[in-house]
Length: 407
Image (tube, rainbow, N blue to C red; front, side, top):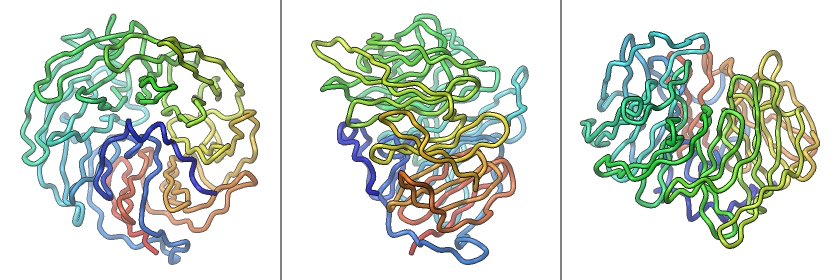
């Protein structure tokens, strides 16, 4: 089935050259990307490994632009924002800053967990302790930095900061979680504050830009709710309950051209579809359905027409699930992969499960067809892969690997 075309997101996506991946979720922040033709079968030992190199701890995803990769990782008592040669994996530059883990819960791995953002000639990144850095992408030199804990009394998650920054017009927007500053916006060139807005506890999930009947909106995950905000000034436009244990709303919501917002979380929550309508600056929110059979934990969700695919579960087995978006009914469950993250390219799903298994599959309303499968990583793999052209970049908590997926 052809991918669902999110036409209303095109104007909100970053303008990207071919193969570029400049932000969390790719060009349209929905983990769907244009690519070359992908092979439908792999050799017995998996796709060709182009290179591999050690990389420190963290779950930060990998960005791609003009022959370089950008990501974040931890080594010892410091975190690093790094630029690597996409062809070899060799470091071009690394910006290191001290970042203590004292008081953090590292049971699920040390940070950094946030993914950087490339905007013009800079890389913007947020540390585990909520420090915002602007780094010159060609040299690795710091342009400016803001300590959001000191400046905005930003909330410090006990596992380390996780949301990824987002660009809107000429603004850089980050989740802060401070009093009257759930979200904050800065001038990307100078670091000057532009606005703060919202007064609610924030969750680890990353924000999403959508367009509701001609109005741009920023979707933000709170610990107990989903909130819509004006990305120009931080005004709260709407809110809807989405309560989960521990405040762990993690998976990025999914938006469609039918004004349907899909949100799913684990820990005794579930999935819900919200129909958003806007007229005269006023947004109405109607919950179309809620069910607790699809509980997406740390993974990504791919929307394909009138159904979506994600990995469901918090503890124990986490099957891949297909769900009907009109009714919320579960269409199928498939247990061939453990807890997974997903990309979509060349009409295929790329599946990365937490045990290091990589899969290639097609998905339809009647089920999942696995075309190829291989073990490519040996440590806990919670980071969603990145595809540029036909080269796939994957990482676990100890290494980064480049794989050739071309047909």
